[in-house]
Image 1 (cartoon, rainbow, N blue to C red):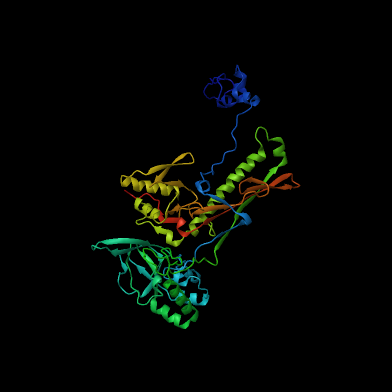
Image 2 (image 1 turned 90 degrees about the vertical axis):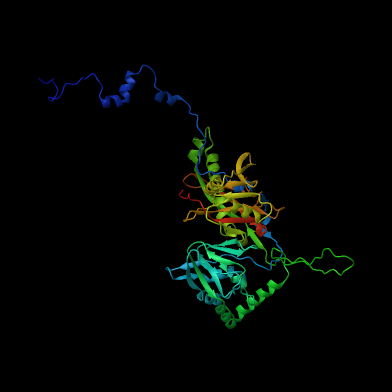
Length: 487
């Protein structure tokens, strides 16, 4: 017999609440004997934090750079006349495995062609290069052999080595993408290779026969004149940094006639103009009027906006093509890792390239990769104190994390070494203080008015740049592999 009101199903206890009844807050409130916390919060004032922002980083570069107040928004770096220009890196365009060409305009990065402006001749030189594939372990040239070809490395790693005093092999350098081999002998008569080069990986190079360049110079008077002037500059006396020499005498006795001279300057020194980062902040008047207690809404909006601008400012100081570190470090101050991961020997070589290195900047993953190499060798990096923090250090030089240094598609990055300060002929940050409506040094907030939608707008601007006073003030360890190798 079924229970009245049922459809023949099992009997149920109507006094026991079902799932719907248990989830009904009104039913729960009716059974409560005291006020619940959810209702009590409606009468309580909450304790709240200021707005938080995940993208704020330590910004060690901004904190460690000495900043120079630039009047007139332009900073000129005067230097001694340099007779031996440094080399840069050429670029390539590729339309297939065998159709690889050097970009003609970038050939002026080679010392012998620095300053050459005849684009037609540069295109002709570029067309003379031929593609050659090199196997890993193949010797490209041997020390003592005549230099008959010039090479541009499209992709791969070459180790330059020489025979030591006792017959052992000594590694003297690593050559990688975009670098040249043999171009330094263009202006010489009967040049010979000072070292040998062996491919550490499979590589692709562009090859230019020396005879082709000689033949082209015979047909292009502008090229012949440029190469002759370059050769003449190479014969002038220079100091060890390639600057025009000043004759001095030492260790003499009696009254010999002293030779005279003067210190020559560059006639076209580089000038750095202040760059900027800007944004327009909008705050509705209703928000600032009604919701600014206990926190000022406009001030909190400005605080987070300034944080974002400072993050972009540090990114620009590292990556900007005009003045950023990664694009303006002298090629002679760039070295490649010997095997891929950053080893203690690689950092030692980087530090040895300049006096008074004050700091190292590296992506956090690059620092981790360096620590792994130290662990494998049983070495423990030291620490240094900076800004109230303990940071890792190598040879007493602090290593600061900088997430603005990019990690490339091949999981490689760079480690930057800096000597800082004007007094030390180092790297300096540039800004201008005392600007109108200044909010922070070098940053101002200007009221732009209220529009018809009742939005108050503020123009927020930071002015800044960076200057490398002499080439050895900054250096970079490149091709730093950050991936963990399989054990």
